[in-house]
Image 1 (cartoon, rainbow over the protein chains, first blue to last red):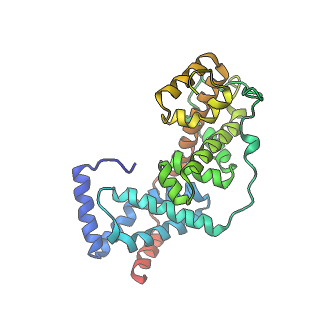
Image 2 (cartoon, chains in turn orange, brown):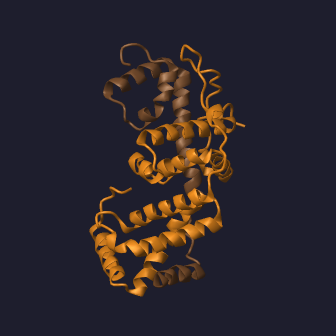
Image 3 (cartoon, each protein chain N blue to C red):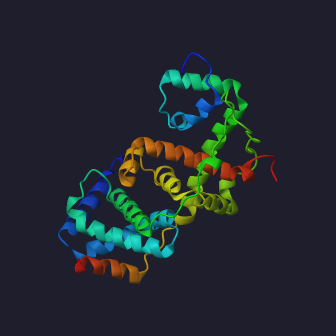
Length: 205
Length: 84
C-alpha cells in the first residue's frame, strides 16, 4: 500500500491540498475530513468492533493528523498516512480498554505425533460450488470466527491480512519483535482455519 | 532441511513463510517434495490460503461501504482543530 506510485494528477492535487492545509485554510480541513472519513471509519470498525469507540478513534485520528500535518512527508499518499494514523488511534483505544484475560489459542492449533505426522487432519474443505465469499451468511460467520480469536492474535491478523501492513510496521505499531508478529500471524490464521473448518469441510450441504 | 523429506510438522510450522514466498529456493524445493507425496498437507495449505482470503473478504466487504460523514461528527472534528 505504501509503495503505490503516485499518479502525477493525484500528486498535484494532493500537493495543492497539503499546501492549503499547511496554510490553515478551513475549507481544506473540511475537504480532508469528508474525503477520508468513510475509509477511516471502516478501519476503526474492523479493529474496534464498537461503533462508539470507532467514531471516537476516527475523531482522535483526525486531531492527531491536524497536529502533525507539518510533519507529513511527501512520497506517501495522504490517504495512506491517514490510514496509519487511524490504525494507531485504534491501538491506543484498545490499550486504554485494558486487556481482558485471553483464552489460550493452543487448542485451535494443529497437533502432531512424535514422528511429525498431524493428528486427526479432518476432511478437506470443499472446493466445488459457488464461491463462499459471495454469500452474506458466510461473511458473517467468518467475522464471528475472527472475533473469537484472542485479541493479541486478532490484532495481528487484522493489521497484516486485512489492513495490509507489512511485518515490520505491524511490529513497530504493536511494540513487539518482528518474529513475534510472524508467530502470532501464523497461529491466528491456523486458529481461524480451525474455527472455520466445521463449516467448510466435507461434502457440500 | 533440504536432503531428507520434511515432516508434516516442519511443513506446517513454516507454512506462513512458504505462502509469503520468504523461503530460499532449496527450502521451497524441500517443501514441494513433501507436498508432492502428502495430500493432507496439500489440503492444509489450501485451507490456510482460503482462510486468509475468507477473512479479508469478510471484514472488508461489510465495513468498506463509505458512509457519508455525519454532519455533527464532521463539525466536532473540525471544531477540535481550532480548540487545540
